[in-house]
Length: 291
Image 1 (spheres, helix red, strand yellow):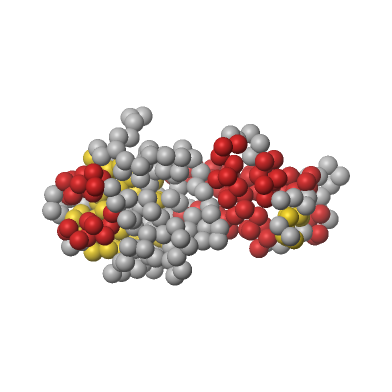
Image 2: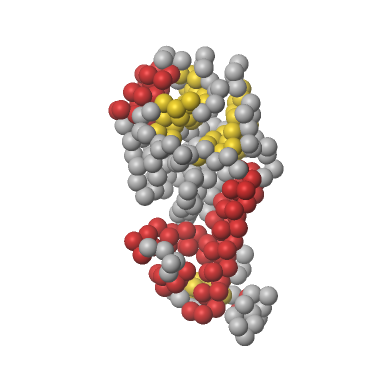
């Protein structure tokens, strides 16, 4: 598989090109992918950070045809370039914002239109179906390019790694429900905001669901051994086979799992220590297995 090169405009299909921002890292992989949709009138999905070279690359590739700027969500690696692109081109800003900023959102993004779930954006060349997919953050959207069955997935699905869910605006219960929701749509490939095109979308979505469920079962099994335990203790045990340098990030997703299980009355928390709910303890065997 060819490496992703920042600033390079890559033709992915008849309607879609990709330009990757120069912001690689642990959380962003090779960098944030901006997708250019259309030829005569262009929409850019996730314009990325306000990096001058990235903005220049988008403007060059659009060649005066940029009409719409859509964002999957307003994290700082996805939408800050939108304002400058709009100012230079007059393009319309489209997307959703959080009712309450959690401190990690791009406050400069002020769309002229917000999407409802399943709303269809249509122009002469293509149509994009907006799918509300909360979980990574509550205002997250995916866009389904209906002419090609291509899901522009933002941070809902990443190629090569799992998505970090950061409470309170990140919600594991909502995330897993949003993954399941995608299985009701005809999707032929997934274009993530980080990484390469995913060509087996159903298998990928099902694998992500199984991974999350598996992690949840690990957590329950660990609670059977350590309960009550702090979040840090649980993280060290559940992620014992993961580089400890990544534990601060992993701890966020584990916290999201615990909050999901708390909503489902599987666990409860007292004085920052987590334990299985009494009704769950009644369902365990002497070996500590869930029946």
